[in-house]
Amino acid sequence: MQPKPLPTSEQPVVAIIGGGVSGAGVAYHLASADCGKRPAIVVFEPRAELGRGLAYDTADPAHRINVPAAKMSLQPGDLGEFQAWIEARDAVAGDPEAKQPEGLLFPRRRLFGDYVASLLKPLLEDGSVRHCRAAVTGVERRAGRWSILDDKGGVTEADIVAIATSHPPPAAPGRLATRLAAHPRFVADTTKPGALDVIRPHDCVLVIGNGLTAADVIASLAERGHDGPVTAISRRGLRARGHAPVPQQLFGDFVSDAAHSAVSLLAAIRTAIKAAKAEGISWHGVIDQVRAQGYDLWQALPVAERRRLVRHLRPYWDVHRFRIAPQVEAVLDAAIASGRLDILAGSVADARIDGELILCTLQPRHQRQPLERRYDALVVTTGPAHGGILETQPWLAALAAHGHLSLDPTGLGLSCNQRSEAIGPSGNADPSLLISGPLARGTFGELMGLPQVTEHAFFIAGEIAEKLRTSATKRRPA
Image 1 (cartoon, helix red, strand yellow):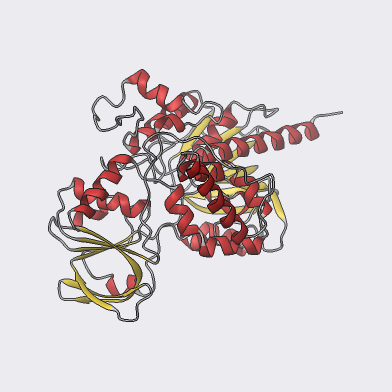
Image 2 (cartoon, helix red, strand yellow):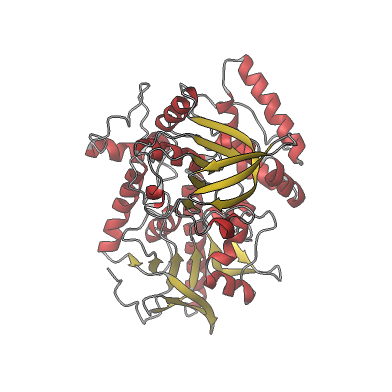
């Protein structure tokens, strides 16, 4: 449904580009914030519903939320709202595997999208939020306002723009994309609907990557009845970890004497894990504390150390921080135990099409001798190509070319200041252009999962509300 025409009065207009959890969260909290004069809030999102984005728009039954439902919410002050929403509707009645023996809920991922969409629905119905079901094609600065062009031919004038777009798609390493593009079972982007349909039940599969997406792919293939051998290769061979058998209390203090280098932070975490073990607490409690104190830890690190951390330690952080759901972990454990899944540390040195097969040269880590292997299918799960975000959307590239956007020096997204205002190549921030969600990671640190995304959406809504109140005060006659 297209939104009603925007008002032509002096009512301020806030445009949010991207309607996933981050963009929907900004709209939701802004709609109830004290803005002085109520703004027109329009969210640009091609999907039928707000709040899904890439993560929660999946219909794959193997895709599950990777943290307990009791810790997921759109409300920073009420982490139990999603679980309460589930219980009020008996929403997992048709999903007996959702509830784990210890009582924690890990429902299918789409259900969280249902929950967020349900919160936005009344705001859409009463006009507080408008959903423009279109893709943005251009954003231009004109006469002190932003002109937003969309693929339906619309032009929207806005006073404030929040960029809440999704992650860029994964990038196939090296020359693989070019050399294997013609192969029918080369899957370069698993986020595309039906991407895994090309893989046959007995195919020998190479998965490049070992994180959450790789785990999802292996679980999805198993759900479809795939029983062929799978090799998952990543540079360090680090498999995604699962949750502790029982919830662990937070352990450690990393901010009282905050580390100023990646090496000292790593040492502090290792020391804390050792101390926690002596008290019967698993590493999960330490990593959760690092995550909870992540913003302050990140701020204490100079940019050079942030870059060093991203370059050398991020893979270790990711596999401990982004844990897989118990149902997915069980699938991986069973595949490894049966010998069907092999996890390899190394890289793909070369690959080419060999008839119906894909001939790969694998270079195992710490070994000189490469391995020659043939596969029926190859799947890329290397994660979002954050450093290439400007190339994924022409309008983002155009904003950068006109001096409004620049890449963050850590390579984690777009550059912004502590108010999440976009910083251009000149180093100046634009108060009317904000970065919401994971693309602001370079400034804010941990911004990939809930509740951090929820907290940041709430923060962005507060920033916008304050700007609107200030603007209204300036316009008010003396």
